Amino acid sequence: MAAVTYELIKTCKQTGARLGRVHTPHGVIETPCFMPVGTQATVKTMSPEELKEMGAGIILSNTYHLFLRPGHELIRQAGGLHKFMNWDRAILTDSGGFQVFSLSDNRKIMEEGVNFRSHLNGDKLFISPEVAMEIQNALGSDIMMAFDECAPYPAEYEYVKPSMERTTRWAERCLKSHARPHDQALFGIVQGGMFEDLRKQSARDLTSLDFPGYAIGGLSVGEPKPIMYEVLEYTVPLLPTGKPRYLMGVGSPDALIEGAMRGIDMFDCVLPTRIARNGTVMTSEGRLNIKNAKHFDDFGPLDPECDCYTCRTYSRAYIRHLIKADETFGIRLTTYHNLHFLLNLMKKVRQAIMEDRLRDFRDEFFEQYGMKDNDKGF
Ligand SMILES: [Zn+2]
Image (cartoon, protein in one colour):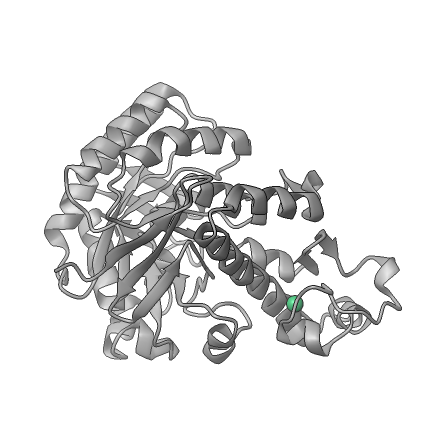
């Protein structure tokens, strides 16, 4: 039996969206779900207790960052990432591929793996499919990702095709070197840029390898959202219905809803935590920046419709003051609210699927949220 299994509860009659559960060694996750990102073994400024309070069942952590610092051997010594960071719910670790390609310097891609220099201190490093598995086996995450190359956008067909084919060969090597399949599930990542035939080939080749779950990578890399939705429309139907489907790097409210409508079960993104640190919050009426002068003497909550700790307790005027004064507590309050907002949105999405009305829910939500924000990030 695979370490992680998917249980389909029902599909929405209006949209085909899936309501389900992902069973992991560290609990059951109701899907569709959003996974807060804890890059360096912490969701920036949030404690595990706070994440639980807001209902997070799974968080994501970054292999590349933990490999560089503090090193996976230290985390192995600590008894794995769950113990190291005191989080007893599920953890997904990415493969390190995305950061190797986006953050590191002087990288050289070879069939064997990737040579690169650490963005922290310039150290010469090497990650291959086998190394990515060794690191993630040491971290002990519930869900591991196969080592892949996320092609940039835009990229030529002549670049994307061999890159995608190498990613498939790397995925096979990951499966072979994965040492803990009994308690860690390895997901494959569909690549192929924005090219329909390449995406389809990638999906077919990877599903023939029989991973316990599949991610769609290489999206939300700068392409317009309609293009991303189009890719989902021809890729998702090729993935098996009995396994979880994860859309990587997507976390804006509209894209979460649109992704769920196209059959996606899991999402992650740094967007809610990153914009929170700049004073931007998501509300039921769209995004607002708390630093704007109009909030100077506004003693109402960030979002009148939100019942999170921040909104129940603190005013816009107070939070604006904290953020303007560079006080950490201000960032904690906006981060808490944004994560709660997305986790709560997914709860509403699941309810709408249950009631076969996700399209109606989307229309209502978009009208109130104001889709002027539609294209500002993923
Ligand atoms: Zn709130």
